[in-house]
Structures are given as C-alpha cells and as structure tokens.
Length: 97
Image (cartoon, rainbow, N blue to C red; front, side):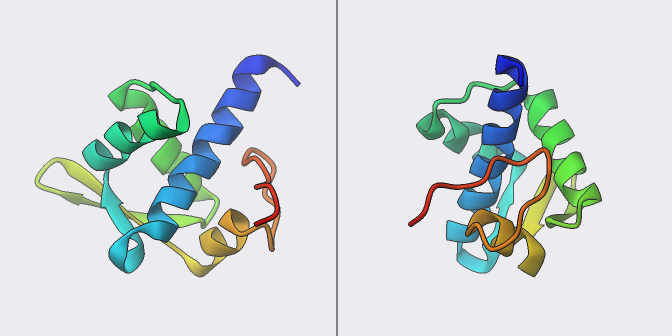
C-alpha cells in the first residue's frame, strides 16, 4: 500500500471518529477541516468535501448542503467502522480502544 493511500484511509477514519464524538454525530466541513489538524492531517477544503462524498457513498455518513456548507452526520454503519466493529476497504481500521 502506498503512503498517500495510507494517509487517505487514516483521514477518512479521523472524520468518522470526529463525527462519532460530536453532539448529534454531526459536523460541518469547515469544522471537520479544522479538527483534522489535531489528527495530523492538513487536507485542502476540496479534499474534505471529496472524503465526505466518498464516505457518504459507502453509507458511513449522510450529507446535506446548508447554504453552501456541507454538513455530515455519521450513520450507524459509520459508527461501527469508527469503533472497529465493521471494516470498509478504503477506511483505516482503528486501534483497539
């Protein structure tokens, strides 16, 4: 596996972990973009949107556009992946808690 692919998979897991820890399981793209720095990631705003769209395609979260800002909400399947109870290729498996 290439280093860029490892980074992408870890970033996607980080998004799920952030949403799982958020009140209501939701967060907007700007907040997620800022919070990803705490996980060692510095993606562009476009990359955050691409990740959110990809995670939504996998059924791990839902998205809605609110006045030009994407708001993501984690799904039950997304929580299972964040907690390591399910595995989705393209998302890093978390370390045991």
